[in-house]
Amino acid sequence: MDFQAREHLPKHSGSSSLSRSLIVGGLVAAATVATRTAAERSWSAVYKRPPPNKRAEDDADLKDAVLWAVLIGATTGLVRLGVRRAARARLKKR
Image 1 (cartoon, helix red, strand yellow):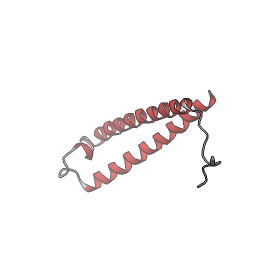
Image 2 (cartoon, helix red, strand yellow):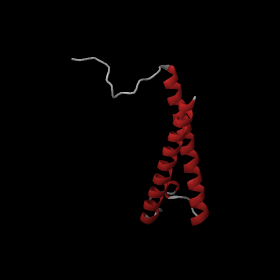
Image 3 (cartoon, rainbow, N blue to C red):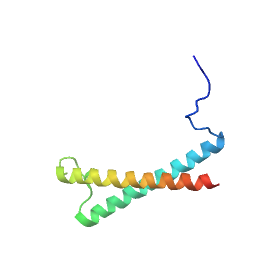
Image 4 (tube, rainbow, N blue to C red):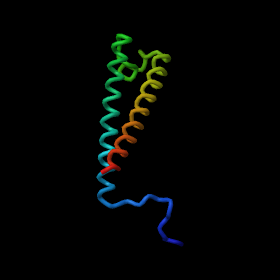
């Protein structure tokens, strides 16, 4: 077997890379929680009832459940992507 370094893998600088990964991960996690909380509050304000994930399964309408899944999936996915890219770009400048 050949154990040479692979050119396509990124080269890490040890603990600096680990700390950057932890910072980015923490920021992404915080943004995800904040986005989900904002989405739940927005849903409750608009529809005057909690989102489907907060109600009993029998009480949730299928249309509401699908709409909630699309809403929460798209918003958290976009926010996570944006925060991850912005944090990595900012940390790369250091």
